[in-house]
Image 1 (tube, rainbow, N blue to C red):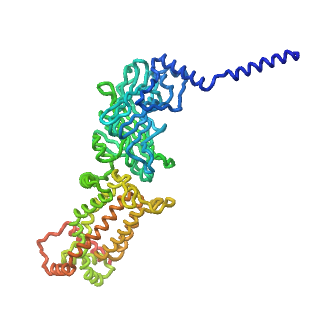
Image 2: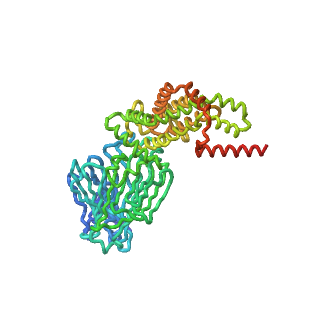
Image 3: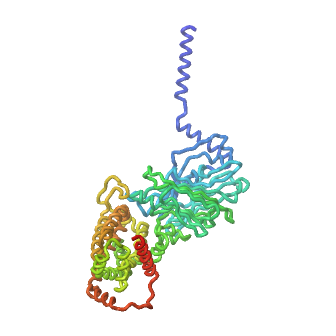
Length: 610
């Protein structure tokens, strides 16, 4: 090859390379061509391209675009496997929902009236980790609507006052065959209607009378203490047969109901809930709760699956509730949604539901600060229980008056025969007309109420964000010192819990003076408040404030009772009782008879050993 020929070839290759470089399409041109091909494929299958949304709608386009192989487009709902995820905002006075065209689902739910503990918008769930879809078989292929792209059709999306509005998210199979998700919303309130309407698909969907529903949600942290929030978060369910409970509050858990019908289930957080309700009920429900403690933004991982039966008009009507766990608000929604609020077990929930809560609601009408309401509630409770307090104090006063005589018996019998010593004590009690358990029984009768409050205040939504004195939020602890977390006690010291503990120690001291407690019993009373401090340090300051007030009012009660009770009169009455002859016809109580018989048997056993 001569020099001229080589030079000519080199120039030709240089020109061709430069032409390829400078004439190649831009990224925008490539993207535009892909969208043109996608729209052509949609037209061939009869699917209408997403239309421009009205000015009243808030419509955003996400960056995520899915493009699939042309062979997939020919499968059932194949055209819906490709698309660009976009969002439509549906809102009223109370909530703001973001709907995604991918899956046609609620992508996020925000409660406009409330904020998180650090004053950020309160969003119940948000993001790609949350899924909602119908699962069925079509053309021999398993379909999950959560993975498919819907076409939004908006009317009026910003709802106000007494108006109502709806938006339809359409999943197309052909121009005359599709599935509509119709979301409806009123101007106020926390309920969102969802009606699933399949059209012309009876010959396409296998077993079209039922579909399977799958909902996965990772509720986000809202409160300052995520451990406390996790303790009160769970999946709550309510079955038509009366079975209602929660799972996963303290551990990973799964529960299935192959036979029962579930009316509703709730992804319950401490103070807020995401609930799905079916008027006709869900069958074959299955609930799963798991914990990921390494993720400090998410409370728990919750999953629910169930089977939905088609209604008479061919649709699947559902209702969402995204709102606060306020007892009265939940009760107004119907379907017994208020049952998910933890009021305690057994008789405790009835005490809270039918006694404490009505009084609390009555006090709210005056518009007082919630610290004042708790004070008034405590005063009312102490007044109701004052007869029991008086009886307990009087019984302890009698025991204190008898103590010198009990010391004489102990010196006479000695410590080496405790059974005989107890028998002699019982004889003294009987002659004096004193019940040794008289001081304990009234206190035991009060215990259910004390425990009921232990469940009532942590579940009380009304305290959330309410300040009183130095306490910025009565629904959580009031830390005065923070440090690295320790087992049980946490990473702080609660001032109100500390004050409650000090007041309990003082109460124990004065109580020992009244009862005349000695020995181990004298010191056990001082250990209990320390245990309470370790336990209640992470609990709401409103609860510790109540216990502190209860101690202070008990001091006042005992002071007033002491003015009415004269030890000399009690001693004189006891001596008068001892002089009375024993009535042979007087029947012993069942407990007293059993106690004497037990003492007698123990005495016989000890005598035989000797």
